[in-house]
Amino acid sequence: MNQRISVRAIIRNDDKILLLRRANGRESILHKYELPGGKLEYGEQPEDALRRHLHEEAGLHIQTAQLFDTVTYIDRDDRDIQYAVIVYSVGIASGHHAVELSQNYDKYDWINESKIQQDTLTDLSQLLLGIIQQDHLTDMSIEKITNNDDINTSKDKIIIYSDGGSRGNPGPSAAGYVIVNSNQEVIHQGGEYLGITTNNQAEYHGVRLGLEKAIELGYKHIDFRVDSMLVVNQMNGIYKIKNRELWPINERIRELIMHFDKVTFSHVRREFNQLADGMVNSTLNAHANTRE
Image 1 (spheres, one colour):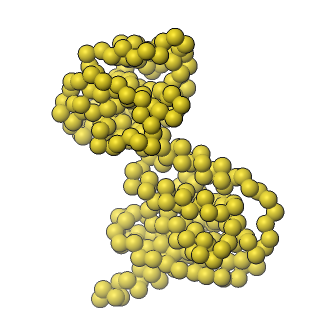
Image 2: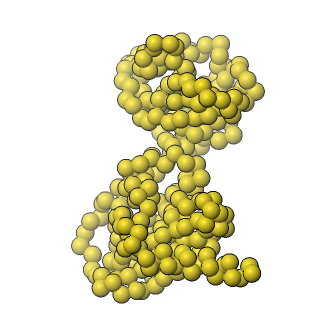
C-alpha cells in the first residue's frame, strides 16, 4: 500500500466553516465541497504546504495555524493509497479574508456547521467534518459533566455499572446495566438484544440504556463504572471518536446527559463489572434460546 500525506484547513467565521467546491477532478469529487488544502510535495513541511495551498487555491494568507488532529484515510477510488491527513485550525491574516479561487474550484461557501449536507461533500471532508462536529458535542457534554458540582443528596445519586458484548465482533450483541445506590444495593437492572454489532457499539448501548432508565427513575447525579477504556476516555474527552459507526450512539448519549445535573465516567476492571456483564450474557443466552 502506498502512503501519502496531505493537509487540510478548518477556517471559521463565527459558527461557519469555509468550504470550496471542486471544478475538476475524478467523478467522486467533482462538484463536491471540501476543506481547503492538498498534498505535500517531496521534502515539504506540513505548515509550508498548508500556506501554499491556501494561497494558491483560495488567495488566503495564514496568520495562525494550530494542529487540530491527524487522521488516516483510504481513497475509495484507489484502495492501495492511504493518506495521513494533518488538519489545522487556521486563522486568516487581517486584510486577507477575500477568497480568490483557482481554476480547481468554481465556488466557495461559508456554511453553518449544523446545516452542512453530507452528500455535497467529498468522502474525506465528510470524515473530517464529522470529527469536528463530534468535538463540538464533546465540549458541550464535558461542560455538562464537569459543571453543576453542587452537593447532591444520596437519594439523587446512583452508580450505574454498564457493559456490552458481541459474540463475533461483529456478531450477535447485547448491552446491559445495573443501577445501585450508595450502599451497593441493586435498584434496577436490565438488558437489550442489539442484533449484529461490534463490541464497542454494544458497550456504548449499555451506557445509553443506563441513562434512559435513570431519567425514568428521576435521578440527577450519575457515576458510571465501565470496563471499556475506550468508552470512558471518549466520554471524558480524552480520545476523539474517529469511527463513524460510533457517532450516532455517542450523540444520543450526549443528548441524554443533558437531562442530569452531573454525570461522571470511571474505568473498572472487568472482574469488578460482573453484574453488568451477567446481564449481557443472560440477554444473549435468552435470545439464542428463543431462536432455537
